[in-house]
Image (cartoon, rainbow, N blue to C red):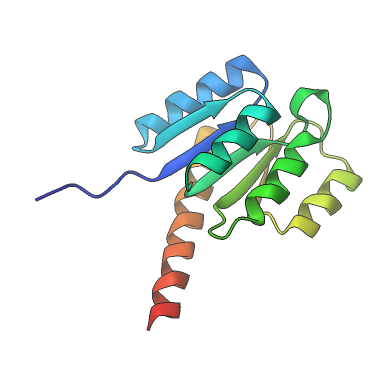
Length: 135
């Protein structure tokens, strides 16, 4: 009997310590993780594989390139669950995130169980929606 595939998560975060923490935390929770520190890397990985979820820092490379990447992820034919993170939430960023219809916004510093809990619930909800659509 084969074991079920581990959910594939793309993490795009330009702060090395946070990227490392998310990578370790998610792998410990049973996820397969692809990690990137730049918009360009995240953009490339979104084109190469189908991800179950993407955890993206809003202010990649000191700009709001995370919002651009989130929009690109949402525009895919099989969009992942998109979770944005920021240490500096502004009204403009929040509005833009809502317009993209991201699945969740994490305000850093975040508790580990917030990130993993949101990811688990979001993936379970998406799977339930797929099953309902198939019936």
